Amino acid sequence: MNLSSISKKKSKEENDERGNSNPYLFFKAKKKIIILILIAASIVVSLISLGMGAYSMSVWKVIETLLFNNDSVSGVVIWDIRLPRIFAAVIVGSALAISGSVMQCILRNPLASPYTLGISNAAAFGAAMSIAASYMSWFNETWLEDALNSIYGMSSFAFLFSMLTVGIIVILSKKSEFAPESIILAGVAMGSIFGAALSSLQYFVDSETLQAIVFWQFGDLSKATWSDLSLVLIFLLFITSFFIYHRLDYNSIEAGSDIAKSLGVDTQRLTILSMLFASVLAAICVAMAGIIGFVGLLGPHLMRRLIGGDYRQLLPASMVMGSLILLLSDAIGRIPFESPIPVGIITSLLGGPMFLYILVKKDWRGRK
Image (tube, rainbow, N blue to C red):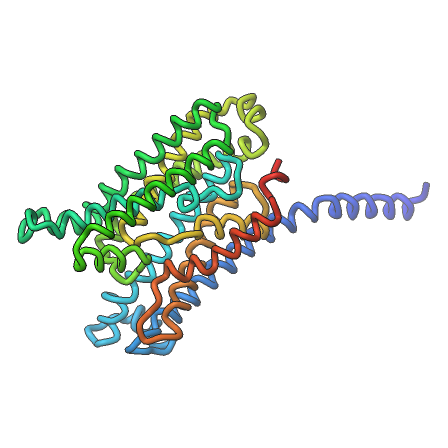
């Protein structure tokens, strides 16, 4: 064999080796590019949204105000009114999306999310109880009135009832050894119960209390304050760290409970802790922004279609997608009318068709 033949053979082998590795490298790079595009889209939507409203501003004016803040009207409008709303969309969207992604994994059901499991309804009932109590004559002009009507009071009540729901779901599903179908059915039942309880509460309260509960229940980001956001952000960072730390365990569970156990994953403990932390995030988000449905369902499903089911990328990607969905929904709700449509209504309009699509496709039967 001459030198030319050896050189050609070596070149062919190198090309074959590159060809075999290229699909993996391309897919890995594709995931990063998609996430970066979503982050860029979120920034663009945020800048456009900051300029929307009765006091409209161009994108360049918004950027100028953000970079060189002053005491002008535009500075007050952006920093005190609109920017907290944008951060609320980012934080709440991220929290609901990562909660939904984790729930879909540990329950092995694509329909799982804080909203579909009834956790949001339970948290909403608790927050509504806090609002109703703050309007009682016993607490008028006392510190309890402000405490019950604050995010701390509503978060406490929302957390209490969401934990009650999770506890009942776990107890009911324990009889079937944490079968995903049992947990889903138990969650649907609890959501129905607390939905009826919330309606009953609205029926018996006075008109002023009813108005406050109904307006909050729609799902609204406009009342978020910097102090509220800091509280939610602390919980989000802590719980997200827990989820990211267990990302490989979630990959193992996705492959099957038996495989996860053979790799040393305590599936029952991880299921309970994951449900607990996801419920905490849902409760705090409900207390701050009201009921915002389907973000925890839409975000993870869209990202699975785009980047696959590896939880090393899926968890952060779902957070970015959840933020983008909520930012877009909030912006859409502010376009057609002078009075903005609550973001919870927009997400339900987007999520409903998606929910039906999943049911028609019957993805839960085809999951491995």
